Picture 1 (spheres, rainbow, N blue to C red):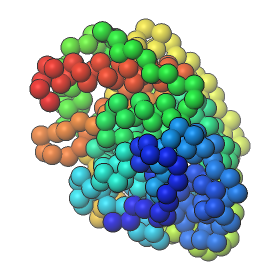
Picture 2: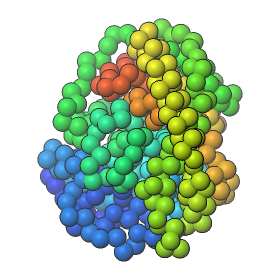
Picture 3: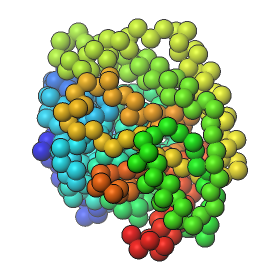
Length: 374
């Protein structure tokens, strides 16, 4: 299974960590799992978040694969090979941070780092049955991370347990101080479109937590998804469009990049208007609730053979992409299902409240385990 693309041995004796191959590590090339970057120059210095890891005593053991150029949601990569889904064989690992999620699920790392521009931490976390956090936009340094310019992308951690995820945040963000787990929290359950089996699992977990719930709706949610697509298309083309000239970009990503290049200024301006309205709407809702809750994905992870066309399956990001547009921190919590396939519970908190988000998640899980024995 193609998870590790470069083996490293840097740092101290702390947790074993691998990072997505969009983060610079001094002395290695950042290739983003693309043949178009096979001759990329060696990085002269570490990404700031990598330096933070090493300063905190982590042991950096490798760089991991991804969906080419971090511009896909399935994790399928015909150049480096697709990272196998260790816990759910035959299913996509999710993307774009496929190797980051798979490494944690396979026990190859205690935690890992990926990036999330439109769900690229939370989708693979859900697919591989691990925890994944998209921090508040700008909370974790992106200096030395590809692409250099973005209004959506965040570096975020994966872990097999919530305590390890909290530890990861403490190591990559010097300002992060774990919050005390609250005795109770009010959760706004967001009305969204998803398969009945997914709703059943998520609603069952929320009910079993015993925490006070309220049903809520965000009227700009659908528009925020579409606007997020417009923004990611423009920004990714600006960062990677020149690579089309090499003729070495994989066919699925080349087609999507070419289409992204047609994004108009008027569409971008309209998307920015949606961003403003949606962000204000989420902020207002979070003034009444500690967190919002919804599924991470609207359906179970696809079989590999059903996910070959990247553009045809972008709808799997319908429930995550809006929060890249707004910049709010969002966490995917792994849940099981009757059929044995993974489901993700997504929690969203106010901007800057990453510590609170993880603390509320811990309360929810403690209650869930106490009330169900699972």
